[in-house]
Length: 128
Image 1 (tube, rainbow, N blue to C red):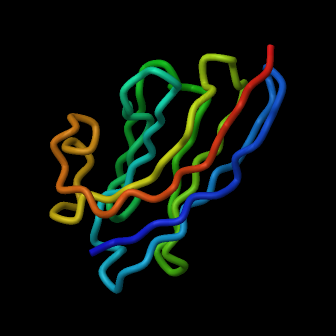
Image 2: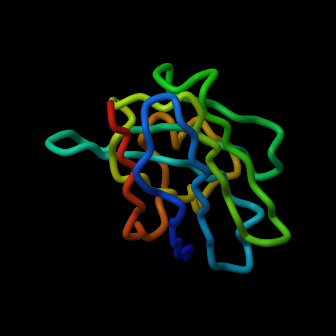
C-alpha cells in the first residue's frame, strides 16, 4: 500500500507559480505510476497529470498542458508538480496518488487505476 502527504499549496496571484510536493511511503514506490488530481468546490475530483514509474512518460489534462510539469525522484520517494501561469480556474485542493498495480500512466488519466490511500491534499488558491 502507498500513503502520501501533499504540501506546497498556498495563495498566489494570477500568473504566479507554485511547486507542489508529494511524499510517498512504500518500498515499491518506484514501480508505480503516480498522478496529481484536483477537486474544486462543488466539482468532482479530476485528473491533472501523471508520470510513469521511470519518468519516461508523462501526460496532462488539456487544461494544464504547457503550464504544469510533473516530475519524480524515486530515490527520495517524491513526486512534484511545478505549476506556472496559474489561473483562478486552477483553484482547488490538489492530491497525489499512485496506481499500485501498474507503472503505466493511462489508467490514472482514465480514472480506472488501482489507487492507494488518498491524502489530505494541499489547497491552491489563485486570486484574480
